[in-house]
Image (cartoon, rainbow, N blue to C red; front, side):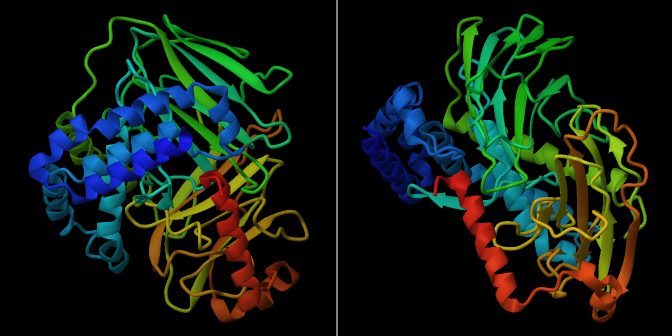
Length: 473
């Protein structure tokens, strides 16, 4: 039965690619194969057999395939390209687009953000909640070619899953951590508005409620109820003082090979009668609305909180109000032949990650290149600190953060899962400075951790292999 589902899914993908826009709505809503696909997806996902068929740590569920198939169809709607062209015209002449790095990455950034908004649009029915893996790298599986949907300085070490919810219904969130394969941290955030669609703060958008690392039973399971003005279960008891619209779950993985994202499922167990599901045209229109509003939101966010500070500097890490840990950010501008050397103190964090993004806030390549490095992927200094090197060209050191050839961009640093009592990281970035690449290894000495071309190839091959766990490979 599962194989038949996948064949239907592949057949629909062909239809989406070949169908003309004039028949778009009829194809999407009336294809017999689609009806079979959805029915089978629901049946399979709710069965124990599906849980057993998805490899641990994998995200290849029938529910995910169905949502991604819908996203592909939405992105093929004629109003999408028109909206993209209109937004591009606004930002093509912006100061950021007039920089070399901004010009080089504008189109890819717009593509990623409109794909991200399509993810939101196809999974925005609180009467039919589903947890969708989103803000991820481009990937191919089961006949689907899925484009990059990362934005907002996303963290490549996070598995982001979102579900629509509302203030009138009750939901049960069930999860299971894999014993011995637990994520470095699992956090849950509820928003009263879709991020980027309302007020702005240093976290991006105001948070209605947040918690992390639920209590598990002996088998690694947990169950949390969201509704009736409260969040309860798994050691959580939080009053909801305002209606909520979206739940975002982040599984943070320091070890891409051995740490797995938890199995998750959300179910609406009470609430008013469900309205008709949104049509294809409605989902496309909502994608355009989200895209047209979130692009200026994140542009203004970066301008206010990141580019307002001098390049190649960093503020002391701040304690995040969501309870995840500490973070800081900044932007880099690196002249040719130089590198930015950044040394960090881990302070005992279960997770420490350093990520790069282009000037628009979309992560640089991190699957087949080192656009991010966390504390498990680096080689530490002899004193336990970690020295990272950002440079356009390979400097020949293990801890190279590769900006994909860009001379400028954004960086973010995150400390999560800190020991109890650690509430001040003011000295966590003891060094950040430009240095000539040719002097780098001499200055770092034994902490340079030199790497050969063969070693780099092996490092990247292992990285690709580890990321593939998420793709059930």
